[in-house]
Length: 196
Image (cartoon, rainbow, N blue to C red; front, side, top):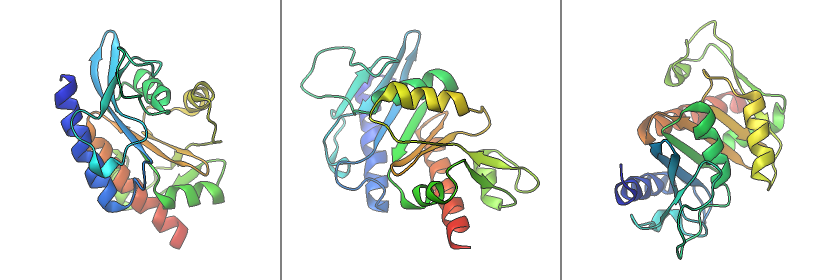
């Protein structure tokens, strides 16, 4: 996939999340893998209204989140965490949205959000019954290295999500569609446990 193709996909996905109210203002960011060796991602640019993105509002970054070439647009400040998640998990896409239910769940269960015996867990590729899924929760930081270290310390190959306390949700998958489906499922799951 080239950068313009990735930009078109990312803009369309951002518009979808904006309609859901999960990318308010200029918040949130998405990335998609462009290449493996070396690892390159296309990530949404910083400071833009995600509901108005165009295919050119993306930046190519390396595994550390640094832009590959000079340009007028800056990558999201959280690009380094996207790079770390993609490098560690092998993800083809990473979604970061500021959806409320997971943040509230992390506030209630700061040691990890436990999910069990809920049909929507199938959306994570997990069993609907007798399968404890714990979504890791990490403290918020503006230091992407610190957030990346916290992510990696709690990473499990069978749990493609991370909640950053008082901030938002990161979910990843093989592509943007799978990452979106997992994000939608996790929003439902955390809303259920908060409201039940």
